[in-house]
Length: 171
Length: 171
Image (tube, one colour):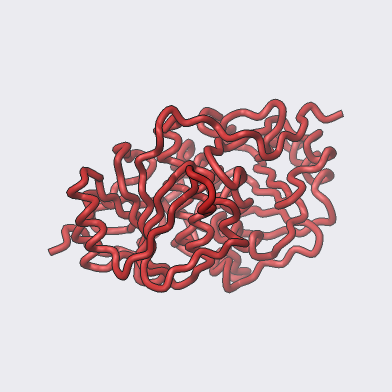
Protein backbone atom coordinates (compact mmCIF):
# COMPACT_ATOMS: atom_id res chain seq x y z
CA UNK A 1 0.00 0.00 0.00
CA UNK A 2 1.23 3.47 -0.85
CA UNK A 3 1.62 5.79 2.08
CA UNK A 4 1.27 8.75 -0.24
CA UNK A 5 -2.09 9.48 -1.83
CA UNK A 6 -2.33 11.70 -4.87
CA UNK A 7 -3.63 15.22 -4.34
CA UNK A 8 -3.01 16.72 -7.75
CA UNK A 9 -4.10 20.29 -8.42
CA UNK A 10 -4.60 21.17 -4.79
CA UNK A 11 -6.00 24.61 -4.09
CA UNK A 12 -3.23 27.20 -4.40
CA UNK A 13 -1.27 28.40 -1.37
CA UNK A 14 -2.72 31.70 -0.16
CA UNK A 15 -0.76 34.93 -0.52
CA UNK A 16 -0.99 37.46 2.33
CA UNK A 17 -0.61 40.24 -0.23
CA UNK A 18 -0.20 40.43 -4.00
CA UNK A 19 3.24 39.70 -5.35
CA UNK A 20 5.23 42.78 -6.33
CA UNK A 21 7.60 40.98 -8.65
CA UNK A 22 7.34 41.82 -12.34
CA UNK A 23 8.93 39.56 -14.93
CA UNK A 24 10.31 41.39 -17.97
CA UNK A 25 11.58 39.56 -21.04
CA UNK A 26 13.82 41.01 -23.72
CA UNK A 27 12.71 40.08 -27.23
CA UNK A 28 12.90 36.28 -27.17
CA UNK A 29 13.56 33.96 -30.10
CA UNK A 30 10.65 31.66 -29.38
CA UNK A 31 7.09 32.08 -28.23
CA UNK A 32 7.50 28.63 -26.64
CA UNK A 33 9.96 29.97 -24.08
CA UNK A 34 7.79 33.02 -23.43
CA UNK A 35 4.76 30.79 -22.95
CA UNK A 36 6.60 28.48 -20.58
CA UNK A 37 7.65 31.52 -18.57
CA UNK A 38 4.02 32.66 -18.50
CA UNK A 39 2.87 29.32 -17.10
CA UNK A 40 5.52 29.44 -14.38
CA UNK A 41 4.61 33.06 -13.55
CA UNK A 42 0.96 32.06 -13.20
CA UNK A 43 1.80 29.21 -10.84
CA UNK A 44 3.99 31.55 -8.77
CA UNK A 45 1.20 34.11 -8.38
CA UNK A 46 2.98 36.72 -10.51
CA UNK A 47 0.50 39.08 -12.19
CA UNK A 48 2.66 41.14 -14.58
CA UNK A 49 4.75 39.83 -17.44
CA UNK A 50 6.36 42.30 -19.82
CA UNK A 51 7.31 41.02 -23.26
CA UNK A 52 8.72 42.67 -26.35
CA UNK A 53 8.45 42.68 -30.10
CA UNK A 54 6.07 40.23 -31.71
CA UNK A 55 5.53 38.34 -28.47
CA UNK A 56 2.53 36.04 -28.34
CA UNK A 57 1.68 33.65 -25.57
CA UNK A 58 0.68 30.18 -26.79
CA UNK A 59 -2.36 29.10 -24.79
CA UNK A 60 -1.63 25.40 -25.04
CA UNK A 61 1.69 25.93 -23.23
CA UNK A 62 0.79 28.80 -20.90
CA UNK A 63 -2.47 27.08 -19.93
CA UNK A 64 -4.77 29.12 -17.71
CA UNK A 65 -2.05 31.48 -16.53
CA UNK A 66 -3.42 34.10 -18.91
CA UNK A 67 -7.20 34.37 -18.70
CA UNK A 68 -8.70 37.81 -19.39
CA UNK A 69 -11.89 36.77 -17.61
CA UNK A 70 -10.17 36.24 -14.27
CA UNK A 71 -9.29 39.27 -12.13
CA UNK A 72 -6.12 37.72 -10.67
CA UNK A 73 -4.89 36.52 -14.06
CA UNK A 74 -1.36 37.10 -15.26
CA UNK A 75 -1.36 40.20 -17.49
CA UNK A 76 1.00 40.14 -20.45
CA UNK A 77 2.04 43.59 -21.66
CA UNK A 78 3.84 43.75 -25.00
CA UNK A 79 6.18 46.67 -25.74
CA UNK A 80 8.52 47.44 -28.58
CA UNK A 81 11.68 47.37 -26.46
CA UNK A 82 12.58 46.83 -22.84
CA UNK A 83 14.76 49.81 -21.74
CA UNK A 84 12.00 52.45 -21.52
CA UNK A 85 9.95 50.07 -19.36
CA UNK A 86 12.90 49.32 -17.08
CA UNK A 87 13.54 53.05 -16.67
CA UNK A 88 9.90 53.57 -15.75
CA UNK A 89 9.89 50.71 -13.25
CA UNK A 90 13.02 52.14 -11.65
CA UNK A 91 11.23 55.45 -11.09
CA UNK A 92 8.37 53.49 -9.54
CA UNK A 93 10.74 52.08 -6.94
CA UNK A 94 11.39 48.65 -8.36
CA UNK A 95 14.81 47.08 -8.09
CA UNK A 96 15.92 45.99 -11.56
CA UNK A 97 17.49 42.53 -11.38
CA UNK A 98 18.93 40.94 -14.50
CA UNK A 99 19.49 37.20 -14.74
CA UNK A 100 22.81 37.17 -16.56
CA UNK A 101 26.39 36.02 -16.27
CA UNK A 102 28.37 39.26 -16.06
CA UNK A 103 31.59 40.63 -14.60
CA UNK A 104 29.75 41.52 -11.42
CA UNK A 105 26.94 39.01 -11.03
CA UNK A 106 25.85 37.75 -7.66
CA UNK A 107 25.07 34.12 -6.97
CA UNK A 108 21.32 33.46 -6.89
CA UNK A 109 21.94 31.09 -3.97
CA UNK A 110 22.97 34.04 -1.80
CA UNK A 111 21.00 36.87 -3.35
CA UNK A 112 18.35 38.57 -1.18
CA UNK A 113 15.55 39.87 -3.38
CA UNK A 114 13.71 43.03 -2.59
CA UNK A 115 9.98 42.34 -2.68
CA UNK A 116 9.45 45.08 -5.23
CA UNK A 117 11.69 43.88 -8.04
CA UNK A 118 11.71 43.37 -11.76
CA UNK A 119 13.30 40.12 -12.92
CA UNK A 120 14.82 40.81 -16.33
CA UNK A 121 15.39 37.91 -18.72
CA UNK A 122 17.58 38.19 -21.79
CA UNK A 123 17.36 36.76 -25.26
CA UNK A 124 18.24 33.06 -25.64
CA UNK A 125 21.32 33.76 -27.74
CA UNK A 126 22.48 37.29 -26.95
CA UNK A 127 21.37 37.57 -23.35
CA UNK A 128 20.77 41.12 -22.17
CA UNK A 129 21.96 43.89 -24.46
CA UNK A 130 24.25 46.73 -23.41
CA UNK A 131 21.37 49.16 -22.99
CA UNK A 132 19.43 46.62 -20.92
CA UNK A 133 22.49 45.86 -18.75
CA UNK A 134 23.01 49.57 -18.18
CA UNK A 135 19.65 49.80 -16.43
CA UNK A 136 20.21 46.94 -13.96
CA UNK A 137 20.63 47.49 -10.26
CA UNK A 138 21.88 43.93 -9.82
CA UNK A 139 22.95 41.09 -12.05
CA UNK A 140 22.33 37.63 -10.68
CA UNK A 141 23.55 34.31 -12.00
CA UNK A 142 22.79 30.69 -11.31
CA UNK A 143 25.80 28.43 -10.76
CA UNK A 144 26.42 26.09 -13.66
CA UNK A 145 28.37 22.90 -12.99
CA UNK A 146 28.56 21.23 -16.36
CA UNK A 147 27.69 21.10 -20.04
CA UNK A 148 25.98 22.73 -21.90
CA UNK A 149 27.08 25.55 -19.53
CA UNK A 150 23.89 27.57 -19.83
CA UNK A 151 20.35 27.02 -18.70
CA UNK A 152 17.48 27.48 -21.08
CA UNK A 153 15.91 30.91 -20.43
CA UNK A 154 12.63 29.45 -19.16
CA UNK A 155 14.55 27.04 -16.92
CA UNK A 156 16.63 29.87 -15.47
CA UNK A 157 13.47 31.92 -14.98
CA UNK A 158 11.88 29.00 -13.11
CA UNK A 159 14.85 28.76 -10.76
CA UNK A 160 14.84 32.52 -10.07
CA UNK A 161 11.07 32.55 -9.50
CA UNK A 162 11.42 29.59 -7.17
CA UNK A 163 14.09 31.47 -5.18
CA UNK A 164 11.92 34.60 -5.00
CA UNK A 165 8.91 32.60 -3.78
CA UNK A 166 11.10 30.80 -1.27
CA UNK A 167 12.08 34.18 0.17
CA UNK A 168 8.53 35.53 0.07
CA UNK A 169 6.34 32.48 0.59
CA UNK A 170 3.35 34.65 1.44
CA UNK A 171 3.83 37.39 -1.12
CA UNK B 1 28.07 52.90 -19.77
CA UNK B 2 27.03 49.53 -18.47
CA UNK B 3 28.53 48.53 -15.15
CA UNK B 4 27.93 44.91 -16.02
CA UNK B 5 29.97 43.27 -18.77
CA UNK B 6 28.79 40.06 -20.37
CA UNK B 7 30.56 36.86 -19.40
CA UNK B 8 28.38 34.28 -21.08
CA UNK B 9 29.33 30.63 -20.85
CA UNK B 10 31.79 31.11 -18.04
CA UNK B 11 33.75 28.02 -17.00
CA UNK B 12 31.56 25.83 -14.79
CA UNK B 13 31.68 26.07 -10.99
CA UNK B 14 33.93 23.30 -9.64
CA UNK B 15 32.47 20.43 -7.65
CA UNK B 16 34.48 19.12 -4.69
CA UNK B 17 33.08 15.65 -5.40
CA UNK B 18 30.75 14.12 -7.96
CA UNK B 19 27.06 14.68 -7.39
CA UNK B 20 25.23 11.71 -5.92
CA UNK B 21 21.78 12.77 -7.08
CA UNK B 22 20.11 10.60 -9.69
CA UNK B 23 17.13 11.92 -11.64
CA UNK B 24 14.55 9.26 -12.52
CA UNK B 25 11.62 9.95 -14.84
CA UNK B 26 8.47 7.88 -15.11
CA UNK B 27 7.41 7.32 -18.73
CA UNK B 28 6.85 10.87 -19.97
CA UNK B 29 4.45 12.01 -22.68
CA UNK B 30 7.01 14.06 -24.57
CA UNK B 31 10.65 13.70 -25.46
CA UNK B 32 10.77 17.50 -25.31
CA UNK B 33 10.25 17.49 -21.57
CA UNK B 34 12.76 14.67 -21.10
CA UNK B 35 15.30 16.56 -23.20
CA UNK B 36 14.77 19.79 -21.27
CA UNK B 37 15.32 17.84 -18.05
CA UNK B 38 18.53 16.39 -19.55
CA UNK B 39 19.87 19.88 -20.34
CA UNK B 40 19.14 21.07 -16.81
CA UNK B 41 20.75 17.94 -15.33
CA UNK B 42 23.87 18.58 -17.40
CA UNK B 43 24.11 22.17 -16.21
CA UNK B 44 23.67 21.02 -12.61
CA UNK B 45 26.49 18.49 -12.86
CA UNK B 46 24.17 15.49 -12.55
CA UNK B 47 25.59 12.42 -14.28
CA UNK B 48 22.73 9.88 -14.17
CA UNK B 49 19.29 10.26 -15.69
CA UNK B 50 16.95 7.30 -15.71
CA UNK B 51 14.17 7.32 -18.27
CA UNK B 52 11.50 4.82 -19.24
CA UNK B 53 9.72 3.37 -22.21
CA UNK B 54 10.55 4.78 -25.62
CA UNK B 55 12.52 7.66 -24.15
CA UNK B 56 14.83 9.49 -26.55
CA UNK B 57 16.78 12.63 -25.79
CA UNK B 58 16.56 15.26 -28.53
CA UNK B 59 20.05 16.65 -29.04
CA UNK B 60 18.87 20.05 -30.23
CA UNK B 61 17.15 20.60 -26.87
CA UNK B 62 19.47 18.71 -24.53
CA UNK B 63 22.53 20.29 -26.18
CA UNK B 64 25.89 18.97 -24.98
CA UNK B 65 24.52 17.55 -21.74
CA UNK B 66 24.68 14.09 -23.32
CA UNK B 67 27.98 13.48 -25.11
CA UNK B 68 29.25 9.89 -25.15
CA UNK B 69 32.75 11.14 -25.91
CA UNK B 70 33.04 13.06 -22.67
CA UNK B 71 33.81 11.14 -19.43
CA UNK B 72 31.78 13.49 -17.20
CA UNK B 73 28.79 13.48 -19.55
CA UNK B 74 25.27 12.90 -18.35
CA UNK B 75 24.43 9.22 -18.88
CA UNK B 76 20.85 8.44 -19.87
CA UNK B 77 19.70 4.93 -18.96
CA UNK B 78 16.43 3.75 -20.45
CA UNK B 79 14.41 1.07 -18.67
CA UNK B 80 11.02 -0.43 -19.26
CA UNK B 81 9.50 0.76 -16.00
CA UNK B 82 10.65 2.69 -12.96
CA UNK B 83 9.75 0.61 -9.86
CA UNK B 84 12.48 -2.06 -10.20
CA UNK B 85 15.08 0.70 -10.55
CA UNK B 86 13.76 2.57 -7.51
CA UNK B 87 13.87 -0.64 -5.47
CA UNK B 88 17.46 -1.19 -6.54
CA UNK B 89 18.49 2.37 -5.71
CA UNK B 90 16.91 1.98 -2.29
CA UNK B 91 19.08 -1.06 -1.61
CA UNK B 92 22.09 0.99 -2.70
CA UNK B 93 21.35 3.53 0.03
CA UNK B 94 19.64 6.23 -1.97
CA UNK B 95 16.75 8.18 -0.50
CA UNK B 96 13.84 8.02 -2.94
CA UNK B 97 12.23 11.45 -3.23
CA UNK B 98 9.17 11.95 -5.41
CA UNK B 99 8.14 15.35 -6.68
CA UNK B 100 4.39 15.10 -6.26
CA UNK B 101 1.42 16.66 -4.53
CA UNK B 102 0.25 13.99 -2.11
CA UNK B 103 -1.50 13.63 1.23
CA UNK B 104 1.85 13.76 2.98
CA UNK B 105 4.12 15.91 0.82
CA UNK B 106 6.72 18.18 2.32
CA UNK B 107 7.35 21.70 1.08
CA UNK B 108 10.45 21.91 -1.12
CA UNK B 109 11.23 25.25 0.56
CA UNK B 110 11.87 23.44 3.84
CA UNK B 111 13.02 20.05 2.65
CA UNK B 112 16.58 18.98 3.48
CA UNK B 113 17.86 16.64 0.80
CA UNK B 114 20.19 13.83 1.57
CA UNK B 115 23.18 14.00 -0.76
CA UNK B 116 22.55 10.47 -1.97
CA UNK B 117 19.03 10.78 -3.34
CA UNK B 118 16.95 9.89 -6.33
CA UNK B 119 14.63 12.64 -7.56
CA UNK B 120 11.60 10.90 -9.06
CA UNK B 121 9.51 12.78 -11.63
CA UNK B 122 6.06 11.64 -12.67
CA UNK B 123 4.22 11.64 -15.95
CA UNK B 124 2.85 15.01 -17.13
CA UNK B 125 -0.78 13.92 -16.81
CA UNK B 126 -0.91 11.11 -14.27
CA UNK B 127 1.99 12.04 -12.03
CA UNK B 128 3.51 9.15 -10.15
CA UNK B 129 1.60 5.89 -10.22
CA UNK B 130 0.57 3.92 -7.14
CA UNK B 131 3.48 1.50 -7.47
CA UNK B 132 5.94 4.39 -7.87
CA UNK B 133 4.45 6.25 -4.88
CA UNK B 134 4.75 3.07 -2.80
CA UNK B 135 8.52 3.13 -3.19
CA UNK B 136 9.07 6.73 -2.09
CA UNK B 137 10.77 7.66 1.14
CA UNK B 138 9.57 11.23 0.84
CA UNK B 139 7.15 13.14 -1.34
CA UNK B 140 8.02 16.77 -1.91
CA UNK B 141 5.90 19.49 -3.48
CA UNK B 142 6.52 23.01 -4.70
CA UNK B 143 4.05 25.63 -3.49
CA UNK B 144 1.68 26.81 -6.22
CA UNK B 145 0.07 30.21 -5.84
CA UNK B 146 -2.11 30.52 -8.91
CA UNK B 147 -3.36 29.18 -12.21
CA UNK B 148 -2.76 26.81 -13.91
CA UNK B 149 -2.10 25.20 -10.50
CA UNK B 150 0.64 22.88 -11.71
CA UNK B 151 4.15 23.38 -12.97
CA UNK B 152 5.30 21.75 -16.13
CA UNK B 153 7.36 18.65 -15.23
CA UNK B 154 10.61 20.08 -16.57
CA UNK B 155 9.95 23.36 -14.74
CA UNK B 156 9.31 21.53 -11.47
CA UNK B 157 12.45 19.46 -12.05
CA UNK B 158 14.46 22.66 -12.57
CA UNK B 159 13.21 24.07 -9.27
CA UNK B 160 14.02 20.88 -7.37
CA UNK B 161 17.47 20.62 -8.95
CA UNK B 162 18.11 24.26 -8.10
CA UNK B 163 17.17 23.57 -4.46
CA UNK B 164 19.42 20.51 -4.34
CA UNK B 165 22.37 22.45 -5.78
CA UNK B 166 21.70 25.29 -3.35
CA UNK B 167 22.03 22.80 -0.49
CA UNK B 168 25.09 21.13 -2.00
CA UNK B 169 26.86 23.89 -3.90
CA UNK B 170 30.06 21.87 -4.07
CA UNK B 171 28.61 18.43 -4.74
